[in-house]
Image (tube, rainbow over the protein chains, first blue to last red):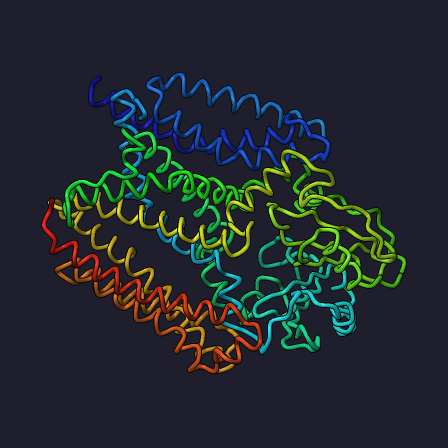
Length: 95
Length: 525
């Protein structure tokens, strides 16, 4: 890989491991409130995304750092982001 | 043994080092102050005791005490009344409501907070205003609060402080997971000791060995700590926006349990003492917090929270009808019936605070917490030492010595601001403690920046920390603190126990200097 390509690769990975991970995790947190089953106490859909938020952040961060394919990293984060963003948009329109 | 591809191992090593170097010092501050905060309640009892410590800590008579106090406050503050046993056993009663604070644009508690004597229920101190301002003026638990706030948000204003500590929690998680994967022989590393004295190999083994022992605990701390920081700063506001149109109060109500329908007609409140005693009997443990909602109304509700019973991580909350005093529901802390989400949050609380088995679990948590601190510090020192040829790394080495050995000195110096201010009757003890902390930190910084030999800096700062810690019992007595015979007669176990603990910690600092100097002079094996 040429030095320019390496540099570009580094910045893409930094973008995916930093701001993109934060945004995707936040979308998963908010979206979780809409698709996680409420359970008998009607709090699972709020409690589980809150509890899992740091784990989602860490998992996405490690994936973004360790997966050799940036396209795969972007695909995983993009699909998560899209799925949750659509849920949030649908909920905000219906309310 | 964790088998990794060379590329993966290289990336993990880079992550481990970069996170450690860029955030390691702040992480070290977080872990050391968090470990010290495990005994926050005992520190509060030690630093501001009353003549005796009442048992149970919410004694009979609370009902009359709260009624007498309620008659002295603005009726709008009767919307929510909380009572718990604070520093030295003072009953802290907060009569409050939630209003929009113009400065912040956010809802905040506003009201009157009273410190009541647990025997006579006379008012010892009265504070009025917004909850954040009141907390600053609450001098009795000031010393414990200073350390706890340093841990929770590094004294950075909300919500940025919580965001910073949340990111640091994640950094600890990254360091722990990458460290775990990098261990080629996890079990062997637990006991492996090569080289001797202060050789690089011996230092590496000490770091890897300590890290191997505390890995699971560090992961638990990192995860639960991140949860706390992100929940308050990001999670709750985001969820409220999505699911409750931005109304955080409704979100909290949904998680804790929805209140009954409103009925604002006036009605007398049932006997609070009877409800507290009943909850303690049902839960087979000690009540530690009472919340009266809608005092003096027909829809009033009284919730009694309990310490965990022996062998349990948590206890149910008993909710009573405010007018008839009858038990409405025994509910978990979160939700009205048990749930996976509620259990997980309860587990996170128990694991982070380490208070599920009383003092014994707290002692274990402190030991493991200092293990994490030791690992963070030895890791940073090792990283700098391996690169000691480069001027930039030598500068970082000075910074590591400054924070690594200056922070314990600054923390041990904080009571030297608190006790004189308290003895002089100054309400704002926070400023005095901040001054003492900064003076100690600046002194350590100046020493680390100018000294030639970092080993001597380490010895000097450790020695001074020892002097400061061993001097704490004397300082407490010199500023009007209770003596041991009176403390023992009054059941003030925390006073005697912490006096002894600080003296031992002081001696341990001298022992550490002696051990380090012995290592330095011993020949490598």
